[in-house]
Image (tube, rainbow, N blue to C red):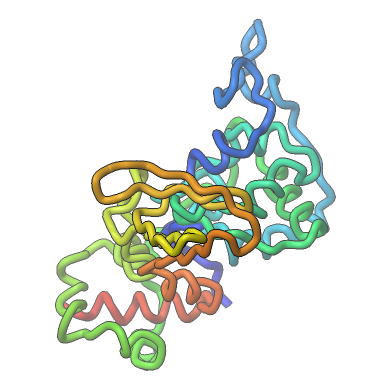
Length: 285
């Protein structure tokens, strides 16, 4: 199987606020700020000594990361179009065996496109080991980008597209001429994997919405801002932001995510599926 050469897409997603600002991590040099280099230079390499995690744990963590995280944060965890650099984020820098990373994975950041992950403690520890295996400063071989992601079988991609995507998308309708409209293979691959990916500033649309029904029967709807086990926050059409405390199923909360089908499929695709579909779509001129 070819190594996965894909451009980060989602939305986990999982995002600068998710990894740096919202995990309640103890920050050095002030809350939510990158730590200052110690006097005398050396930058991150000296502020945070390099770690040497167990190679076996690193290998296990890489497999989990590749499937669940690489689309947004890049194969080398140094960021992509939709996810931030994890190596220099306070959460990873201050993490010890997954204690801080686990909090982010367990809660997710749905409004920013990052879902919750039900990893075991052992899996979280392995992911942490993988992230800690990279050098905080400097370069390594994992940062070498392949010349092209268009390496699949277009015929196989056409068959896969019809089976998995044809019920919602059409090569003579919404995707007509997509190979001409998006000539860069990486961008095209990112776009079909997660259509709302709009680059490092956020999504271009298709935001998740939420309906909250309080005990009186009143229903409040708006754009989803934040949700966890304790509160849900939304922004109504007039810009008013409202927060509701959650106690089990009270109030009733319904999330409507137009990209949920795409997010669900991210865990279904194999490397070959992704490359084959991309190879097919680039032929649609």
